[in-house]
Image (cartoon, rainbow, N blue to C red):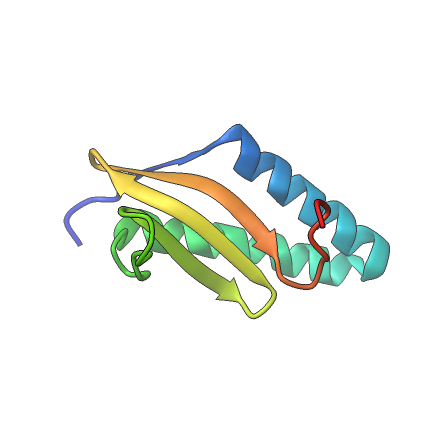
Length: 98
């Protein structure tokens, strides 16, 4: 491990994280919220040190999909020596647009 890469969160990914946190606050306990925050910190640490750890999408070049928990998926791009978190998805929640 030579160096850690910068991790940048897009506005969309931050809004996704906030929405998931609000959902957890309503449906679960503070303990689950704390676990979620811990998962995000661990993901950021892992991806900053090993940005190619998670598989690349077959459909979209450079887009990677990290399942950080059976209920949480993070989508990111690693390019120009920087990790950009594009979006997050809570697999328990129904898609709001459907």
